[in-house]
Amino acid sequence: MPTPTTHTHAFRAMNCQMAAWVRTDDAHRARAALRAVERWMQRVERELSRFRPDSDLSRLNAAAGRPYRAGEILRSSLPPRPRPTPWP
Image 1 (spheres, rainbow, N blue to C red):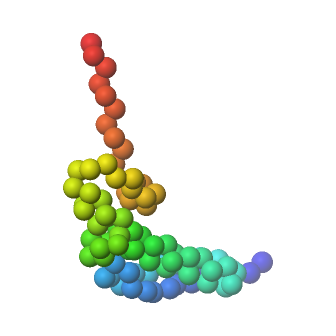
Image 2: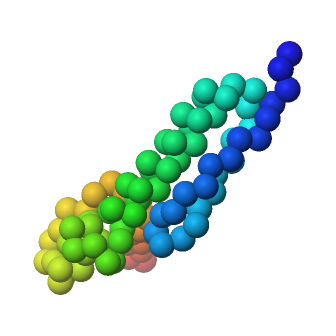
C-alpha cells in the first residue's frame, strides 16, 4: 500500500499569501484538488472584494438599502437571519 504524502500549493488571493495542503498517495488527484482550492479562492475574491466594483459585495453596497439578490457566496458568508420571537 502506497504511503500518503503531504502535497502543498502556495498562491496569492485576497491580497494575502495562501497555502493549501492535502495528504494522499495520488499525486494527480492532489494537484487537481489543490488547483480547485486556488480556483475557489479566486472566485471568493471576485465575489467578495470591496475593491472590485464588479464584485457581489460592491453591488450590494451600491444598492444602498434597496432590494438586492445576493449571489451564493455572499449569502453563505452572512449569518442566518434571526427567527421572529413568538408573541407570548
